[in-house]
Image 1 (cartoon, helix red, strand yellow):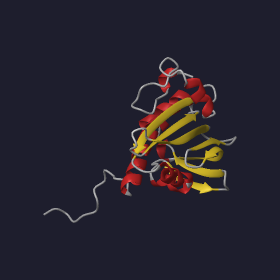
Image 2: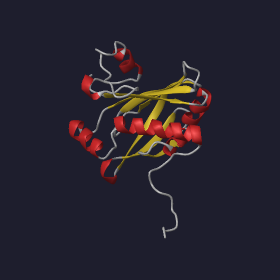
Image 3: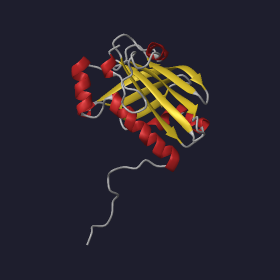
Image 4: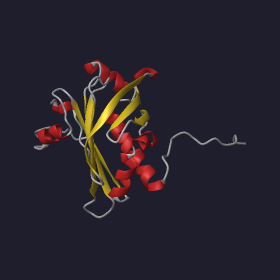
Length: 193
């Protein structure tokens, strides 16, 4: 696992074995393969963890705050079909399976064989130690399509998982705490006089 390409949940400090002795355990916990990029992000949300888990566990809710997720279709209790926006106005699709589900605490998944972007990960819902809501921690492992060139193109288009994970968690926090996701786009209004 290359230390320089992984990010941690708090800030942007590298997830490396030198700084995080539990990196191998984390790498294993999300089903990462050799050469995968490992991304971790977290946010504290002022809501009970059960509420956050329930909202996230209904994967059809994810496009409400995940900007690159076009749709998630539920196939059955463990399987879902994902359609994701890719650079250049294209989309990629894959099927995913839940591999661990601890209601109120954790959801872990992995893409099925033949996925256009092999990925796995988990989202954890942890009571905040200062009793101020829930820490939501997402850890992703993925094999960037096109290797380093594909990763660079994704980054240029703001479609790279490291960038998206940070932005998506901010939107999730907004949605769960305020009921809406703020946008930079001005609302439709009458012209100024």
